Image 1 (cartoon, chains in turn blue, green, brown, cyan):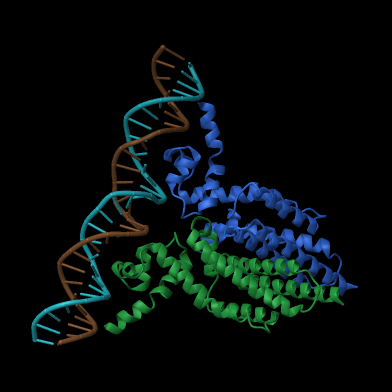
Image 2: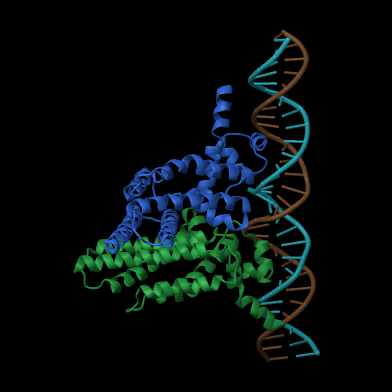
Length: 204
Length: 204
DNA sequence: GCTTTATTGGAACGATCGTTCCAATATGCG
DNA sequence: CGCATATTGGAACGATCGTTCCAATAAAGC
């Protein structure tokens, strides 16, 4: 019994996260969290002061644990576009066991739903967006090293890539056919390769 | 007095839309709609059977009236990428009178929040996404006419462009500095031009 | 094994949710 | 003006919202 309790406690955040991820902040009631986590209301509130605090804890868990690995692969000194392609393939293959529509990116969903009206949430969202943009900027630098393109240009492209990634996951929440999502990913990579090529051509 | 009533009635959908747009479906209560529209509950329910039906009416109004003009510019037989650039400039200049974070795209917000769990809403969202993708495909065809690229490739790119546009608006709901949004737009156009150029180079 | 401390399930709170209903009021018509 | 027809504001519904509280139960220390 103690094992079971401990088990539930340990999985509080992951379980709550799944609920919030699927149904959103306002679409999730405390009753839903009780059902999903197997804990009672008092247990939930003993560890987190409010539903809002619990949500932010889930969001932090998502950015620092679940999504961390994916981004970190693009932060290595030698990360190239293949790393981005592999990241997409990894998520897409994980979706083969599910049926559309999918759950998208928890951070992206939260950005749409809560960021404008919740300063604390917006801060977390902003930090992750910046990190993802810098990671993609790192990839772009590795692909177009030592060129004399204005840094401003690189930053714009990285920013655009970041929003494109967010857009793809957002789209996954309404897509009916998995191939439409793969199509968007293929188009994104194609676009990125073309841009990298154009910068290299312009350099020579 | 009759004028006033008629005025309120006429603006029911637009006013309700603004409320839903800013706070989302679950974040908007009927009391909020009463306050925003100036109508009473009975008036709201006399024209629409439920909050959900009213929301779908707002979503249809958004796609067929508000967003229609923007898309139609990209559907003309001679639409080029400049048209897309102008579309972004138009929305960005409209944001200068507002302070970030912005409201994003109502359809995009709805796609994230409601599409997975509401079949009726997903149908509307899907139709608009398809239309936007076809419009961008039209632009892409006009920019790379008479080449021998597989149609599959064009479709992927158009699909990617559509999700990128959605991503930019989604990002606008958490952005703090307007220039970060402009940066994403500039990056997107830069990317698109590079791709078009690469297709032309590949053709010659 | 008994006492102390921590954690639990579940009742209950006031507030708000979406919805229904009706009496009061305004409108259109003869 | 007087009557019929819409349209209105607002009370009220049961359900659920997020939160608090406490008695019952489990864990730990001696």
